Image (cartoon, rainbow, N blue to C red; front, side, top):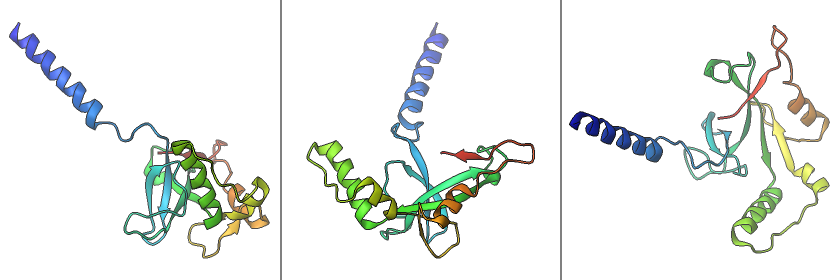
Length: 162
């Protein structure tokens, strides 16, 4: 009887520790980001608005990274690569953060850019490039659509999420 009670206590303690320490995040969806100065991927809440603080300092040099697996296996770190990077202008970032603050504080948000204007404030770049392009420019579309190919077996590349 003492053995069963001890196992039950150990099981409950293990369950508690897993629930308390074993969860990686609070349930908010996560996304990949890339620290430009460190040239490193990291994970942050998807609601983060780039450019944002990176992993090494207070400089806002981290941008969203769209990560793909060319073999379709996102679980294999060796098959993952960055398809492209994206960020927003300071004006659009401020507008997004104003909207998010409205959700928290219930105060009115500040919309300074219309949806059509906002597209000119959303930028993309291939990793290693020095120039950012508006997402709806010819080059921006080439960047965001150019990675959409298939594996030699005919399977599409997979977009990876943490």
